[in-house]
Image 1: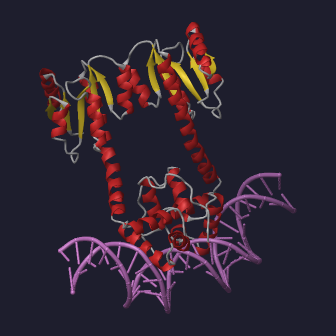
Image 2: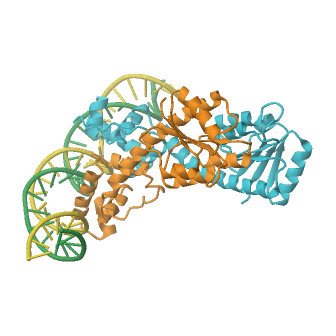
Image 3: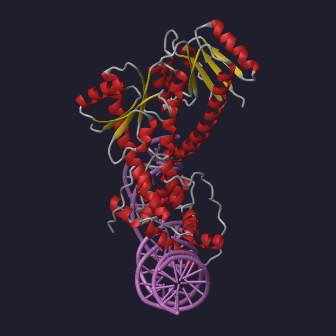
Length: 212
Length: 212
DNA sequence: TTTTCTATTGTCCCATGGGACAATGCGAAC
DNA sequence: GTTCGCATTGTCCCATGGGACAATAGAAAA
C-alpha cells in the first residue's frame, strides 16, 4: 500500500535514517522537527498517510499533538515511537486512538508492519468519514423546520402525529417531508432512517408512544 | 460503585494483599490462582465486575485468558497487572479491549481509579449488550422466509418489489411483513430499520435501485 | 423595491401499507 | 393419523404516503 509517512522527531539523524529506510520501502516521506511544524502545514488527508511520532519532543509532546489533531478532526493514524518503555503513556496513547506504539530502536519489520496497518486503517476510516460527511452535509441543508420534521419522521411518527406535535396541518408536514427526502437524497423511509442512525442521530430508542 | 473484583494471580501473597486492600475499599473479591480456575467458575455477569489479571501466570497467560473470555462473549473488563513494562504486550492488550494495564507495584490510587473506570465501563457495556440481545432474540424468532422479507423491507423495498424478488404474491409478503413487525415488536418501519441497523445488519448501504 | 427563501395550506388522485376474516397445502412432530 | 408450524393467497376496506398543480404570506437578502 502506498502512502506518505510523516516523521515527527527532533533528532535530525534519526529522521534522516528512518526517512531513508522508508523511501527505500517505497513510501513518500515528509519530515518535521517538531509537532508545531506539522500543525503548520497539516497533511492533506486526500492522500493516504500515517504519522510517525516521537513521544518526547521539545515543545508540544507527542500525545499533545495527538490531542490537537484529534480536536481538529484529523483521522491520520499515529504510530508512536518511544525511547523507553512507559506503560502509562502507552496505554493512554492507544486509548486515545494511536495505531501503535513502538520502542526505539525499531526493526524495519516492525516499522513497516505498523505502517501498513496504519495506512489500511486510514483508508477504512476515510471511507467511513466520507459517508458520514455526505450525510451531514445533507442534513446541514435542511431548514430548521425541516429538521424538526426530519427528527420526528425518523422516529416513526406519522404525518398526522408530526402535524400535531408541531402545530401544523398534515398537508404542511407532507410538504416538509417531501423536501427532506429530496435534500437527503433518499427514496424511502428506510434509507432515511439508516442515514440518521449512521449520522449519530437516534442515539436513544424512545419516541415509540403514539398520540393519534 | 460497588462490584466484584476477580483477582487472577499465581502469587498467593500478592493476591491476599490486593484482596485486603480492595475489601477495605468496599469491593467484593474473588481470587483465582490461575486462568483456568477463572474459566472453571465463570463470573456471572449479572453482577458488575472486573478482572485483575496478571500478564504472566503459569498455564494460560493473561492475554490468552483475555482471548478465551472474548471468544465466549464475556464483556467483563480486564485490568492487567504486569511486573515489568512491556510495550508490545501492553499495546496488544489494550487493542484487544483491556480496560487498563498497570505495573507492579501498583499504588492504591491507581488501582482504585482503574477499577472504578472498569466497573463503569462494564455497566455501560452490559446496557448495550442487553439491547442487542433483545433485538437478536427477536430476529432469531423469524422463520427463514420471514427473515428474507425482513432483509428486503429494511432496505426500503416495497411489498411489490419484495414479492417480485422472492417470487410470491404481494399479499403473501404482506402477511410475512405483518408477522415480522409482530415478532420484532415494533409499530413502525422506522423502528424496524433502527433495530436492524443496531443489530449490525445493513452494514452496506446498497439496495437502492428500483425494479418495479 | 424586488427577488428569494421559508413556512404554510388546499384539492385531486393514486399507490402502498395494514387490519379483518378466511382458507389451502405441506412437511414434521407426536 | 392428527396436530402444529410455515408458506401461501384471496377479498374488502380504510389509513397513510406521495405526486401534481397551485397559492398565500412574512422575512431576509440583493
